[in-house]
Image (tube, rainbow, N blue to C red; front, side):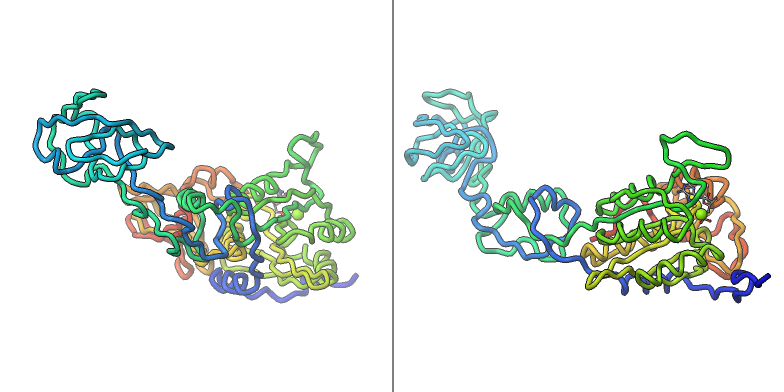
Length: 416
Ligand code: AMP
Ligand code: MG
């Protein structure tokens, strides 16, 4: 009997998580710029500088419901002014006002010439023939100047800006119905394993439900990318080849399962046929095995991430390696989550040579953190309960209660 290639293979050299991430970030392609309808730009990165096509606001207008007046006439109260008209938002004043005159004005309505101040309605008797001003009002109060938000011609957003709700509003104010952004990554996600069945399928002995395709598809969406949910692939070269060929029209491919030592042996020939991929052993727990490379189809290069099958390992390696890669592909400069430091409330044992990402519950007010309980790589509740990862470095076997430890704040977006 031939010696199995698995047992004959020398122990894999471990790679640090930082090295793996650096290689991944330099290995993934930047997606092209595309024009999208304004609302589709949310969460994406601008690929153009945007300037104001007009002043915003475009004309002097009232910030209050009240009376447009001349400041000189309301420097002292009470004062009586003749009401010479009324102007609503969307209208335009048909005359100017002179000394001793006022015009009723609504919030957002253009100021009439001659007026420099608005007296809010609460500071008047609210009459429509002769109005009594009951509070002295300083010059310029409640008047918004033309261009006080944006000046015509001014660059208001630059390429590289992440588009959030406020940016969507700015883009709308300057008439950008279509916006140039870096493309949203369309990411194929598939599961591998003969034991895996879909969420709504009958389950036979020895089978388990597919959690990963759903958790990973959701993590893809949370990274601002678009999941393209593919199937559950049987552990055969033919099934894998067919599934990957189909998935190759995506911008990236994420698989789970089948990357542990031993599994490579049927994955490797298929992948070397379709592209190139490295199988890494990363010095972390959970999530030690990880495969990264690219599939090629003519000029197209499609990055592929082969994540481990355990439910926690796949989501955690997604967080550490795939999320930053997808963000970078979509034009994000910063792909690093915010971090914090906190006092550990319980001792944590770990393997000395591995960096351990314990799932934690961080209390920001108290400055403390606890683990979420059992930390096995198949205990997905450990992630569900967590609001952070406790990043415990290699070189130590134990972290004691009371020590200050590093956290990755996985509930907060990467600062822009
Ligand atoms: P593997 O990496 O393929 O050796 O799988 C490691 C462990 O994760 C095994 O216990 C698998 O049954 C489990 N596993 C693999 N894929 C999935 C999946 N899609 N959903 C839930 N568990 C999985
Ligand atoms: Mg498997």
